[in-house]
Each structure stands twice: as structure tokens, then as C-alpha cells.
Length: 386
Image 1: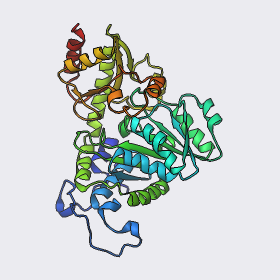
Image 2: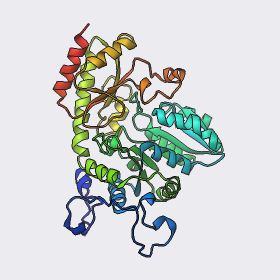
Image 3: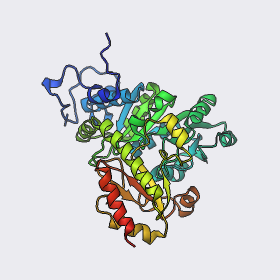
Image 4: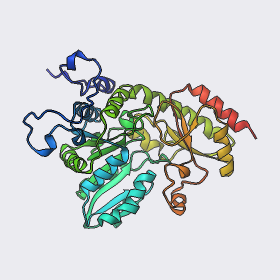
């Protein structure tokens, strides 16, 4: 009889937990030991050692993460960028070519545009909503295609089904950054993606107190990436692994609430006369609405918008708010607000940002778990000040 949980919220609590429980501990203990007694392991990557990401804390997370996205395997890393960079440097080698969505998290964009040349890896950016364009940029040495489930910070939803089909047709590795959606709203393996990447700092942990990353997907690829990570050293500290493990157990509760709250806030902002534009795929007016409804279980707690006015007006509005904290990052229990040009996309050239629609006045909001009514009331007051 198979006693493995099938429902998502149950997997969050029980998948990957040690059986029998360690000395009866209901909560997974912190294994604050860099070194473990040799037990006959064969091969370097199987030796128990923190840097090799195979302590009990790591292994429990790997099993839980794989179960959440119904994937074959998973791996935790020291940060989201460690997950992204190690994955790309594993599936690509000297002389290879990457197709990447044009609107990406600033750190990913900078890694591709600034660091790929050092490894003699080339790339082309593509409009991920226009599959007809992709084949024109395909090359004999193209090995992978990269996109985001919901783009940072414009919340665009690519033609993800076409991405998977294109990758399969041309024998490419398909990678998707699933941070904004989280496994609650989207599980890439179910749709045929090879690798799903996360900044676990964000929704997976949800409490703004660690930095971590995750890679979820096909076992063969995860094994290769693990070997690369073991050499590059992007291992997750045991205490951070414990906090991630603990934070993930409330993921479903948090994200379902944040989905609903963000939609209500987006609807409020859309009808406000001082707001020029709102980017949220849950709005019926959004061009990604139909695609998002087909793909996702919810549209996340992320949205972005522009006020009528200039940068000074945007800054004044943000400073008038009492509840949202002006800070980078996202996905925590507290509401955070920022202008991406000063944080997540500060490393991009201004002309590249503007070409993609990331203006100096764009405001990004990460909705927390405060009462939605309080957040809207706070915004109403801040917007009402002339």
C-alpha cells in the first residue's frame, strides 16, 4: 500500500520527513555538523559533508521539494542566484548558445549579459510570447531555453506550453524560474519543463530571514548540477536549511491568502484615478489573463504599477505608506514595496530597462499576509494626499 501523501498541503507537512522520526522529534532537528562518520559511501559526491549538500537537513528538503512539484529530484543551494548560475553552467559549456526570455530578473539578466562571455557562451533574448521568433534565433549550438513563470517585475506570462514544445522539438533543456508563482500556483514538471528554479529566499521560506535557492526537475540533470555545485561550493547552511524546512510548511496557507489579497489590491489600484497602469495577470484586462487562468492555480502575491506623475511622485507615495516596507526582495509575510530600477534591476542599463517597459516610475509590490482591508486603506490615504 502506498502511504505517500497526494494532496499539496499534506506534502508540505509530511513529504521528506524522516521515518522513523529522529529520537522521536516531531520537528526535523538541525544537524549542525560539517562532518559525518564515514559509513562505506562510494564516490566523492556520496561522502556525508555539508558542502556536498547531503546532510539529513538537505536530504529532507530535497525530497519535499521534489514531491511538491511532482518532479523526480531536487537540490537546495545557498541562494537563488547559485541555483540559476550553477544550473546554466551545467547545461551549457564553452561554445554553446542559450535562448532566454527578454524580461528577466535583473540578476539573471546581468549574469547572462556580463558573465557568459567569460565562458565563451553566447545567447539571444527572445520575446517569450512570440514563438514564431524563436526559430529564427535558433542555432546549431543552441542547447537550452530559459524563461520565468511570471516575469519580474512586469508579471508577464510567456507562452509556456510553446516553450516546452519548442524545447522538445529541438532537443533543448528547458529551464524556468518559478519563484513568483511558487509550487502552489504552478508545477513546471507537470507541464514538461526539465528544470524549475527558485529563490527559496522568497515564497518557499516566506519569512525574510534566510537566503536560499532550489533546483527541481529531472533526476539525471539534478545529479549533474549537484556535481557542479559540489565543486563550486554553493551549499546551504544547516540552520538555513532548518528555517527553509519550517517556513515551507505554511507555504500553501500563505500563498493562497496572498493570491486573493493581491488580486483585490490590483483591482483597487486599477480603478484609482491616480494610477496609470497595473501589471497583474489575475486582472481580466491584462493580456496574460487567459493564459494565466489556463496555467496557474493563482496569480501570486506580486504586482507592479505606475502612478500618473514622475519619479518624485512615486517616491512620495511609497514614503507615505505606513504598512508596506520600502525594501528589496519579496514573498515574505510582510508587504514590501520598491522601485525595481533601484533594487532588483539596478544592474541593467537604463536603455535596456526602458525597452522592456521597466520604467523609472514602476513600483513593485510584494503583498504579505496583513489584512487586505488595512493595506488598501493605507494606499487610499497615501494616494489621497496631494
